[in-house]
Length: 375
Image 1: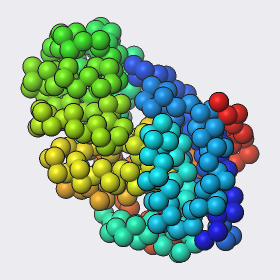
Image 2: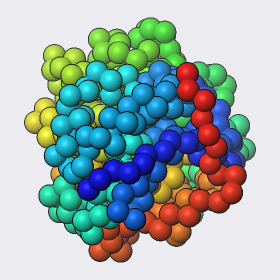
Image 3: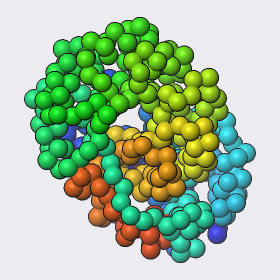
């Protein structure tokens, strides 16, 4: 394959509702959109740079793509050369994981289309099959809105829940009262603190005051405070979900001293693409850790589709799966039809196994895409 062109732009789609958590409030996508062209085919990729996760912005992502586009056109011809470039630029990808994720996903989609194979066949993986069940994610909404969201999810048949904490004791106490009144046992609910508390003591005090047994707590402290989070896990007899604290495979070594307490939230965009994510799965399995396939708020069907590849390869260690909101959250999606969960939080994937690349029909509208200024 001769890569003819690769183009990075910003994808701008409003949300149907504002989504809040402790680190950010969003009403629209913050997405790097990449298109790769060869042999009359176009591959599509998506990455979600987040300052508070990987330190990236749309401007830095654009600068990364501008700096390396000519190298990609000259050197990447097939899957081996894609892997070769990635292996030779580990540090560059470490600094620009969401940007590279968008590029890599576009190239994998393109290679699949040129070779007329779904991405799973291209990578030598089993085809997608069966059902994928998603978590109901409840944002940091005021009490009445939070209760309405929960009622909606319960009526739809969801069985697994994640609630965003705010650090405001009054606000968070109202959330757990709503959960308790709904009859949800702690085993069904995870809390996501988004690096909320400065110390383990502060986190323990705040969580104990809520008087609700969460199945796990995600990122209660600043990213990388593994010792503090291990203390929280032991004191509260719970598990810790690592998200911002797990963006590279070499960080897994920090968990070896306290096994049995950790769950990895693997999001393709923050990990630096699909291939890195797939490489992480056997390392998680070998350490006997739990795995959640996560998502960035505002993902389109492209990242949802790529995450299915990882979930399908990791069913034996998969605790939960997040995302697949599609047009539940987005005013419109780039894929027709939008990949999104249905009743019970279930997405059926069998229909995606026969197409080429991501097996998605991509349609962008005027105004969806805009040029980016590099940092």
